[in-house]
Length: 269
Image (cartoon, helix red, strand yellow):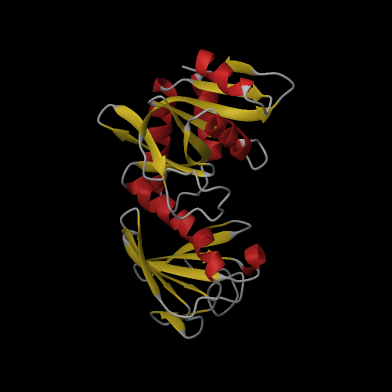
C-alpha cells in the first residue's frame, strides 16, 4: 500500500504518486476511484474520448484524465495531467497499480516527442539491435533468456522505446515496466535497430521477410497504448510508416533452444 506521496521523473515526465483516494475534484466535478467511471455520477463523463476494457481517457477543464478500472487489479486509479502530459498526479490506493496506469500516460507523452513504446523484447548483440514483438505467451521472455546465454544483452523483455536519432532508428528501455523476470536488463542502453521480428513458437526455426503493408499494420497493432488525441495518432502512423519502409521486418517461428540465436545471427541481418 502507498502510504505517502512519491515524486518520480519517468522519461522526462514529472509524476507524483499519491495515496489520496477521496475528495478529488477537477473544477466542479467530483472524482472517485472506486468505480469504473472516474466521476461521481457513475455515468460516462462528458468529454470521454474513449474507453477500453481496462482504462478510459477524458478531458476536463484543461486537464487530461486517465482512469484504471478496478476490474483490472481490484484497485482503481485516477491520473490527472496537464495538457502537455509533462506533469501530473496519479491517485491510487495500491502502489502495484501505479505502473499499469503510468504506461499509457508515458506512452502518449513520449509519442508527442517522437518516441514510441512497443510490447517487445530488445536485444543487443555485437552492436546490432533486434526487436522481438508478440502478444503475451509468444516467447519474448524465452527468447531473451536464450540470447543472454549466448552472451548478448537484453534491454528489457516487455516494454521497449523506439525513436529516430539523426537518420537511424534506435531502441532503449523504460524503467516503469511492472514485472521483474531477471536482473540482466540494460534499460539505459541504446542501439541501432537492425531488424524487427514477430514471434511465434514453431517446430523449426524459420524466417520470412514481410511486406511494408504487413509490417505497418502489425506494428500498429502491437503498440501497447491507445492514442489520447489526433496529434498522437498522426505521429504514431507517420512513425510506423517510415519504420516499416526502412527496417527489415520478419515473421519468426522459433524452437526454444540456443540454435535459434545462431539462426537469427546468420539470417536476420
